[in-house]
Image (cartoon, rainbow, N blue to C red):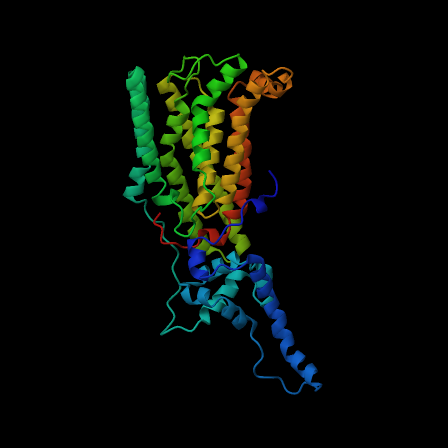
Length: 422
């Protein structure tokens, strides 16, 4: 997938949206901010040329470019509690360090400091905000992130201990309980979107459910399809004609807790870097290792959980598919949390469609004269096994989102202060 900048045109996050007070076109805002300097330098000469007179003494009312910029972003300056929020808001409108240099400032942070200092306020200006202390994780979201894994473990145990209609009832009740627990965990704490970062029409629920369903049943279906089956419907066991893999589902449910802690790690340390940085490029360079570190922490925890689940359930290990799917879902959630919901929706949809296409091509190859359709998938299954297809798809999708995240989650506007507790 190319053209990552076109995948996502995020709106302001809660902090940036609350500061700006109005959604303006990014390119137009940046162009107008840059043209303010030119207007300031030429307005006096233009008046004298129009009158046909030589310029006399310097005029006292020379246009102030910074004042004109403050007028354009009046609500941003009035609502800001410190210069960093003004810098994040300016960056969200396309103002860069190069633009700030035309206002005779070395970077956007220096320009934001002047704008903040010149805003008229009642009384003395408040003292500079001290560096943000790392807040402790709240007990409510910490407990909610443990619920999906606990309920999923209870469901898998119940399914293995029952048979027939009772097994179906236990599975249905367990799926409902895990779904409700996941919904609660994703609406609190670090995994919940900011108040101003609603996904809108860019929702990923359906494709996420499809990817999880394929992790449980897809490999068994693909293996049976290549062998000429399946000969029956899944019966909830790992030895049936259409085997069920419970280890990936249990691993991903248990991984909800380390995903929340990794997102918390990234959020609080990125805000501290925002306090300490003196330029947009410096901030981006300091946050990128934090993003990669959070992903690495999550993958290490995911690998350990998968090894435990495989040993406990006695299923064959499939680390590649589980790790690739876990990384894909984690990066998609991070982008959605910070208001970049378009790219996750596109990438998850493409990955789900590709996984659905693999067994469909095998079935289509059974038609007369269409055997060539199944040849690529059968070759990949022969070389890497049934898990090689979803592993390759999810790894490519996760890499795409990672590249996109390193260009969007390293912006100051993505980590503006919000009222969301971490």
